[in-house]
Image 1: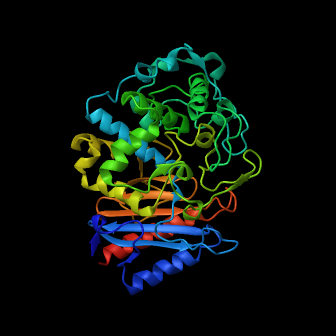
Image 2 (image 1 turned 180 degrees about the horizontal axis):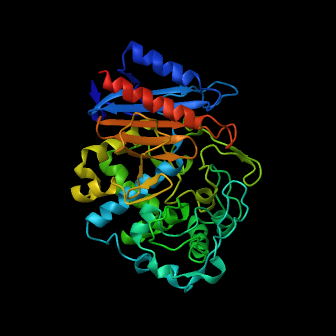
Image 3 (image 1 turned 90 degrees about the horizontal axis):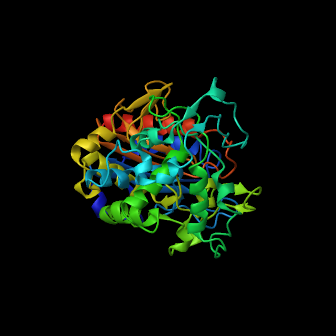
Length: 416
């Protein structure tokens, strides 16, 4: 058996055994080419790498580029775990308190004074949503938003807004210079983030999953370290200490080739091209590819390595043991959505991670078809990366795949 230190993202590993491999192949065959054209899996049990493998095609139409374990996937919201990890390291270093108001670090967030409420926007149709009852007579003081609220998605911020339209025109293709500097795009986006109405009161324990909150947390992380942008902090605090060489924002601008990157959705309406080497998420793309909620690309091996570091309480994370344990316990729950500090916790009913993973399991999903999940009772880490949005974001199947995959892997571990 090999541990993570013995393998790179290029190394193909399968230690599952013949029966488990046949069962896994059947689960993948039911979805490959239908739910997604490309898949990478890394599975770690008790520190040993059981699987590091790729399936499918980077270019499903021509099939000239098979997917190997070193393929780079758009991590989507799995990026949030890297932002949260960097922030919790800053908390452990005494740079900030979890219960500090956001305005202590980003004072312009409170410059508007009390703001009204509305219903936010639908991220798919972009239509405005109806406001909550009584919204017309209610205001929110932005000074009440604590950093803890951003991590637990209890800030009262809208789940989504079209920040990318405030940030500037559609960016140039990712292998061409963008005439709008990234700093200018983010400055405009931050101004918008500091003015949007809320959709609820902060700190009431109501979970409203919010990309906006993690975008603001990315700004907090950047300012606390006095860095030029979030990418520098994520590299310095997470990727370099853990040796995660594949993890990067804007991969075509950091030495990667298009042939090594798995493409996602065709976007004729805004960008006028298929997303290939640029982040699928419009808001992350619109601010220059670097954001606290999305933007990272990487291999399954390196995503799993982050999960293994959390499972082991790896000192290289720079997170105090008590805070690490606190981050993966329940802080808020609404309608089955359970939240730790930056982490999703397994829903107690109807979980997308399946039925067999223990209720103490924690992880995160990404909209492009990615996930990282950790079952501490089994010492099991599963990084599953796909590009399920390639045929279109409304294509069904990813939930069924995730449940089947995680249930199978838990059963395999139980039989070892």
